[in-house]
Length: 108
Image (cartoon, rainbow, N blue to C red):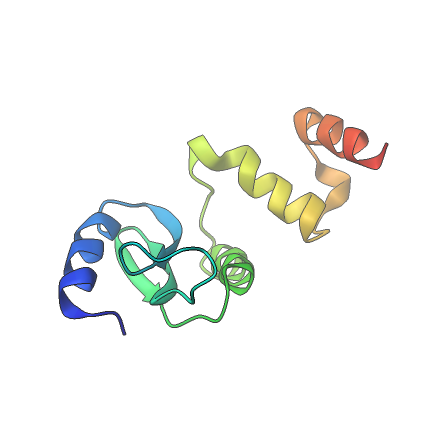
């Protein structure tokens, strides 16, 4: 668990988010250092924390979206579609034209 002051600051910021994977690092630490916490926020509520990696957090977030039957936030619609259909290979036959175009470019 992060230090109290760091966590309180981060908690206020996380409460403003609709859907997010968060990584909390000590101030001044680089990307080589292990983060203080990795977790998931849904509608301002921290639903998971203490995760081992951002990759596992993203996979768990997709699982939570499916399990809780949540819709993707409009500003992140294509981001989640790429994660689901290209990265995770879920329902690839239902790609939107934009994601199909990206997928084609990635194949070349």
